[in-house]
Image 1 (cartoon, rainbow, N blue to C red):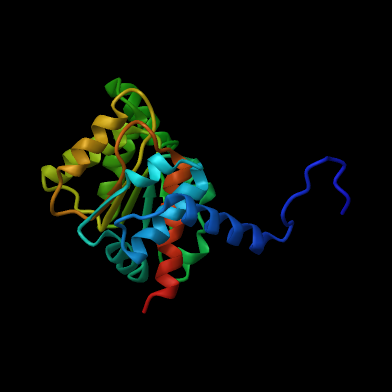
Image 2 (cartoon, rainbow, N blue to C red):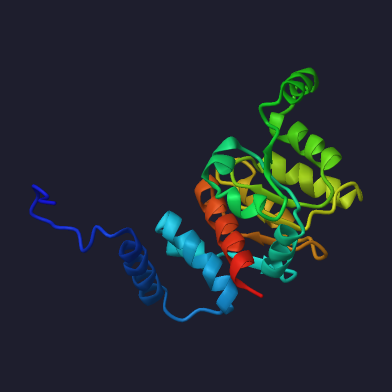
Length: 217
């Protein structure tokens, strides 16, 4: 293939692009305190965001990666706050164990109840998710109100997720919701510090754990 530009790509082979990317990330990241499995997650977050500051701020609690692997292998469902996460995640890696991904935010009953209560659909979707799922992995990358509602349900003894990936992005309550998540001691979670985050990095973390579920014995 002849690219009509002065700059030529280092390679156009997909696998080699990944290899180059991960080698650059490793070199630029330098020394860090993440375990080998944690680094597998963090490097995918950096790969998805090109943001080393975000990567360095990632926090893990309660053997989060193993909790996620166990949940996947038990066929637990994954609950996401927005459809973008559902679309970007490799579903087959969950479905092979009997689990699947669910997003309730656009369900008719959720929209109707949110309007009735004059509250966010994200809040009502978490309430519905907890009613319909035992345990599970909650992956929240967009809506801080979803994460805060999930935390409330946990504190009231209504919800007990297997794992929370809580990385919402934004200026209103995003950083604060992650600060509240970091206060939970008995629930495995993956989060980061500050306003940064989003669906893309949440998908990256979720996919990394699902890949490890196939690899780690």
